[in-house]
Image (cartoon, rainbow over all chains, first blue to last red):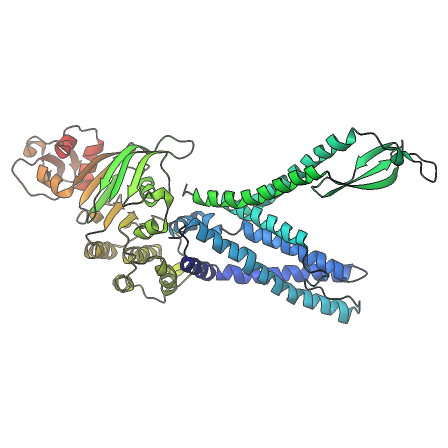
Length: 284
Length: 278
């Protein structure tokens, strides 16, 4: 394979110096957005900026930020004025991708963490010292570290963002968001149908039909979750549709396999699509 | 060096711009690519640069297939498009960041050409005029040492002294192993520079001939009346008389009038092209 680390470093330098102003202003804008959101929650919540809220904002923010930067990754190929020069630069598709991945997976998340530490630190100081709320500071230090699910979600978002950046020339970020939404709707829709096929036509079991203490008897069941989780949840209700009980059940093993294989194939297909689209880039 | 065979290309939803085009280019020569607006001159340059892929037919540049855009190929081809936007960098920074991508880059040549164009290293590219940006781009292109240089309307935006400088620089720096294709409407700016004429019409090369062969077989004259020209192959009204093309039967020496030849070739005149093609 024609891959030169030297050219990668050169491309990295070129991109970094050429877009230095965008990076500078982007970092300031990121800091301002983070600080605004954190301060909003600091003042609007009666509990102040509590630990779990910080965690939620920081992790969801990182997820969105990673997705946006991935979808913006090949921006030199998007603009009419920069496209020709970008295509004529003597680098391979893999080198271009490697530099894009480095920016998206290493450099930008580090920038996000640093701006979060600054903005979160300020918000936490106000929350704990000025408002005296006594909340702890979250700096990606939750118990058990960063979860596997969070990392996988990040990976999926980054891969979809990169593919979107390679596929779409105009409004790449917006179109990538729409693609992501369509993908999730499609997955949920598929699971919904699967669940209905597997469960809805099955009658309630004896134990499910047992009456409640107040005498109401379960009559029907309905779906609670649709996503490709390893367990499904459904509820029972009486004749009038009043909620009675919640059940959680393990998804059949074979379905788990199908879902996992489909998921991993999608993860492999996205980089393949990215490389393919980068290779097919023409001026027109 | 360059070989195109039966190449066809069309933009999505439109009729073919290049339609069964075949062409061979040799190193050490400067080709003037002429054609009407929309004839496909820029499209042809983009095909050679690997920026557009043929629908059918073959395109080879050296040992490479341009559409694969291998780094070694991209190091050996440089295109200066008609319009472009240079980044917000100083001349020095641009050279420092881009030159390492081209192993054959010659910093001294770049510096020397930039000096001739009165551009200094500290100048900001984005604050240069379009003409100066073009001069910078041409200087960088020549300094890359690329084997195939493609210039799309290089003299557009250049002032009169710069056009002269441009001709001097091109003539002084082109090596025997390099080939240059200049697409232009400004034929008078370049007529002293070009070795071979390529006329593109209706998606094909209508005429490919060396200037030396053209002036050996044809004579270009200005006459006051039709009677003076004997039996012209082609004539058109010009200031104070007629511009004519005639067969060069007396080994006369005349200067090629590219504009006149171009008009003659596109007029449907079927007596000139066979003389140059046999």
